[in-house]
Length: 292
Image 1 (tube, helix red, strand yellow):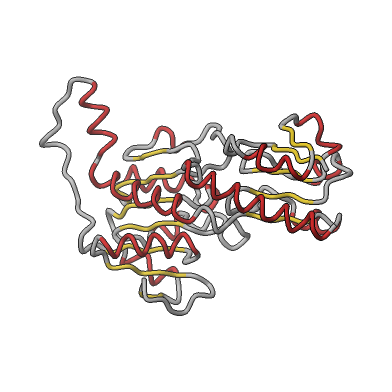
Image 2 (cartoon, rainbow, N blue to C red):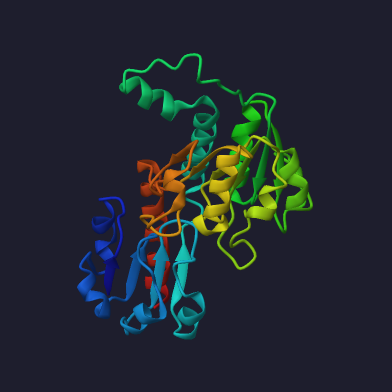
């Protein structure tokens, strides 16, 4: 069995998987690979699958599977897994860090200090305490974020198409109910036809004036141009994102927008999470090898 590690994982993973067969990071050997390990960079398209005639399993280290053609993979009998359980803490902590950093102007404070400026009067902080957080997407990560927000004594509203109750948030039946009440909105949705471009010119009108938006879900869940306009007009006080239309972003209008914090898709990249991902990958391959 040849296992191809196509993207970056914990350095311990090759030796962990060596008991199942040969492990390589040589992408030129895709045609021989039985199992391919990916993260967000590798796109498992129809063409990719057709160039891998021996492929039997794809494991995505992380949550989203929008970079895998699931329909074609199923047609070809290829098993596709993710490691959703692993990344909850890492992504929730990043989302919360961004939510703290935005209203405290941490990046601007740091950069202007390095420029020799003293903006003590200009940088007006806003506390999270007693504010309302609206979470769109109450899966593992959304619920983990809710738990952290409650520790900061925030009111938490949540929307999810099939979550009807939780002790961690007040459930709203529609997104339209969440947005006008929220001082902060955090996105934790997969990229689906119904979520693509969900945050757009029309939904942004529903936001509370001066709200903050955080996205650690999927870049294409927002219309970038509309978010830029909301930032320029002051409708949004700030926007922080770890996810983009492409990795890295190409000609994104967000890069010139005011009151923003950007990260290079590092939500799942804590050292602890990379080890958890490796443990889950090892279990999945073990189960596959036993069933052969």
